[in-house]
Image (tube, helix red, strand yellow):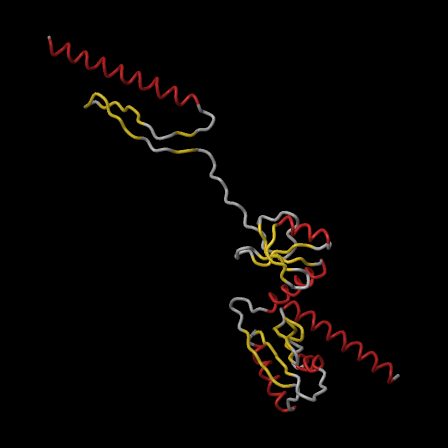
Length: 267
C-alpha cells in the first residue's frame, strides 16, 4: 500500500513539473514571436525510464545574415566633399607638399582655388591627397588607362626589341622579320628606339615603317610616344579576326580605286 502511494505521488510530481515548465517557457516564446530568435535554454523532455530529463537546445535564428559592405570604389578621381579621414597630407596642384592639415582646411583650400581633392595614397598615416584641376584629373586618368592598356595581360607573352635610330637597313630588316615571327605567335612586341646623336631621323616615321612591314596582321597596342629624353617606344599586337576582316576589306577597296584610276588614264 505504501509503495502504491509513493508511486502515485511521484507520477503527480512529474506531471506538475512538466506542466509548470511548459507554462514558463511557453510564455517566453510568445513574448517575441516576430523576431523568430531562440536563445539556448533548458527544455524538459519526458523519459519513460526517468522522472524528468533536461536537454540543452541549440540556438538558431531565421533572420537574414547581414550582407558584407560593398567594396569601395578605387577609381582615380575627385573624392568630392565627403572625406573619411580627419587629418590629411595635402599636395597642391603643382606637386608641392603643403604638409598635414585638418580636412576642413583642405576643403577651404579647394574652394578658394576652385580645385578638386583626389586621394593618392590611403594606406599611409596620414593619407595623401592632392589638389588638382579638372584637366589634370582627366590627363591622369588617360595616362593610367594607357598604362593599363599597354601592360601585358596574364598569359600574354611580351617580347622587346631595342635599337638606335641610326640602325643600318639590313639590320632593320632582320629586326622587322623577328617582329613578324613574334606577331605570328600572337605575342606583344615592345619596340624601343633611341635617338642617335646628331641624327635627324623622324621617329614617328621610323615606327610607321616598322608597322608597315607587318601591317597585314599587326597594329598598335600602344602608339609611339616619348618615354624619356631621346627614347621613344611603342607596342605592337596581332589583329583580332574582326580587325583582320576590316583591314582586308579596306585593302580591297583601295585596289578597286586604283584600278578605276588606271582605267581612266588608259581611256
